[in-house]
Length: 518
Image (cartoon, rainbow, N blue to C red):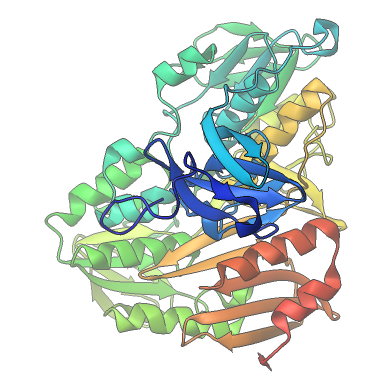
């Protein structure tokens, strides 16, 4: 990470840094051999790592150092201080790690350490082969974690589309701020280098649990030692007149996003049906492209069910300030070639329509196989299903969290679950306890959400939402179940750590001082 003109900032670590200049657990930004790096003191030791997060380039110098890790302030990727190894999503790749030599009271950073190769371990303790159904973030994370942890057996990845960075489909790519070459999570060549066989031609059709065999729709069969279901979710298309017209779109895949981008080139007006996270992000992106945008939803305030009335009203003000219009407490009843007709008779001009009304988990394979399901595929804390050789991760997984079974549809959760399943197959234990995290972009405001509140009876706001400087707590019977931050990245990292360790006092402190109650 450097300055705004691209130059490097801070000391040249190759020339040396006085040990006493480092403050315990506070990264010092500098550079080594023309690359930005951070130097971190932990006790009498010092560690040097690349300064840029492998996910979206977040500034690790502004991150949190705790328990032998450094965490990115933007999206909470986590790295091992000693090795640079990635320990937590949404990053998939490790960062450079450098040799540090102490000369009395001077620290010199030398060259990069070679990436640490992990021993494969006894083959008898590992599955003979791993087949992963679903080439999205959960499936990719699982495959790469297996290789990173030393698994040497065959890995086959079954998908219906090449793996892409799904959040960008409704955010920067749809808005025209990110080129398509940024989207692949992993290319076919990169997977081939990792010895992961990618099959996109034929979807999975049937699981034979007794034989440990997966049948594909082209008649091919694959035997497995372990099977991972990462089949994701299907976007819902409302069953109303005109829902299948060519200018009506859902948004889930790269093809969906490409189609909306193409349609926006000639459209002047857009109606987004659904004031959901993806609906609002799509609305912001289309507005950025210059379209007149109207958002339709049945609720009184957008996102209020998940984030509360005060945050919902704040989000609504953000979108309205950019010229978007809301038609709330309304439902669409019909779409024509040029309009969306609402249940009160109002007709909205619509050259382009996007439905963002939620998704359904793809459970057909699991249900047909007889795996236990309950509004998702039920798994244990290691992502294992009712069959000990089958795992489920991502949008389909209903997993234990904070004393109840939950299903969460966010990329960071999916990637972390893929890693957890890989570790479980190999008998390894992750170093970091996973805490749900997601982010949502609304024009120039990003909401970061840590934890998970299925229910809450009180919302506590510390700071000011309108000043875009706030920490929001979601409490159930005085227990903080989730925390949302606006421009308080460090507070978000501290909240994540508090959830990891069960430190409720810190959570209360984060949402307490100067708060208002809603």
